[in-house]
Amino acid sequence: MAAINKRSWTTRAGQDRSGYEVEWKDASGRRRRKAFSGSKAKKRAEAHKTRVEAIAQGLIAAPAEPAGGDAAPVVVTVRVAADEWITDVKARGREVSTIDKYEDHRDLHILPTEIVRRDMPGTWRFGDIPLAELTSPDCEALKKALLAKLTSRNAAKVMTSVRMLLSQAVRDGLCPVNVGRETRVEIVDRGEGDVEIPPKDEIKALLSESSTELPAPPTFTEVWVHVGVFAGLRPSELRGLAIEDLVLTGTDTGIQVRRRADEYGILGAVKTKQSRRFIRIGKGSVALLRRWLLAVPRSSGLPDPARKGEKIHLLLPTSIGTVQSLANVYNRVWAPLCQAAGLTLPAERENPETGETIIRQVPRYSLNCLRHIHASLLIDQDMTPKQVQMRMGHSSIKVTYDIYGKLFDKHDGDHQISATLERELLS
Image 1 (cartoon, helix red, strand yellow):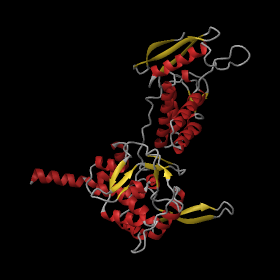
Image 2 (cartoon, rainbow, N blue to C red; image 1 turned 30 degrees about the vertical axis):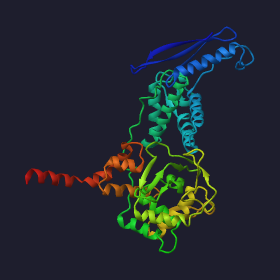
Image 3 (cartoon, rainbow, N blue to C red; image 1 turned 60 degrees about the horizontal axis):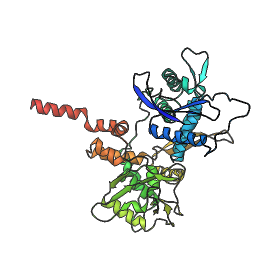
Image 4 (cartoon, one colour; image 1 turned 90 degrees about the vertical axis):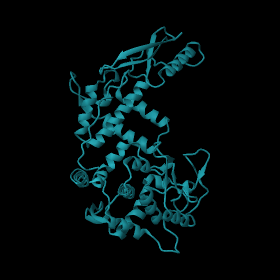
């Protein structure tokens, strides 16, 4: 019979941890142990106990043993843990684009990066280090190696993946503690991530060039720009927006944001609770959307990933009612609009056949520009950071400050604060 024992340990940081260990004897009488810790550790241990007892009673088949006597013990490396982590991410139904990002982190940065380990000869590929030997200094060494070839922001993303895979290894019982838990990258602000907001005259040019005159129906471009500027949806949310999400009657008109389309055109529910939100819109937007509903291409409907069993009809679909690709929106909508509005910059590109340098005009701003315009308008209207966070669907107030903090600073104005202090104290 198998037994479950509770065990405790202390991490290098002095933190007390606990978990459960299943102990049993296999068919050859060899003593076996398997540890479980983290989320639902006891339930997973009990499930494993039930399995090994069923094997002992002949109710289910035992795993096949390699031929040739006792097999060499399997060394669980970081590579094995990383593969298990990706398998778990896929099993949880994460979006294809998210899985691709994690796989890139694993294959391009985590596994192949070479580090020098303390008191160990030579260099080691991080993926080849046995999980049982992995230490906090190893994770620190990986962080330094990543910072030598990546920006601090990208290195921080990779180290987040490292912590995630080690947390999964703890939950799977592959290691007792996450030794990378305290290893974090301090993001250096050099201004690369600053959002660029077009001045008011350029915003007006975008709206003017995209608009159509009555009685002509609105175009895809006009709806995309108008909803982007006055509702602040992400491009992925605009591509996943459905007619069923619109509330165009009554006193509380607006848009319910429920889903998004990833870079492969696959519809999925929005990622966070904060992204699920209701955005109120004005009379001008309501009138435009009502006109658009008379012209928008319709289809038999698509399955709604945000509401099982329901069907939706996209607000901004292709001509056959399917999801627009991001490339189509950029090349057929955004680039021509920026060209017409005079918002382009020259860019050099080499002709792959002749080797000649080709200069072409490209949009000065990204597709996210419309969303940034919306945020700047909210800040201009004296909305608080918390109100901006809720309207934009940010996961936390920190995200709002990270992206738009300087806009809040400019809006407040130190000179206004100083003038107020002088007025109150000296008048």
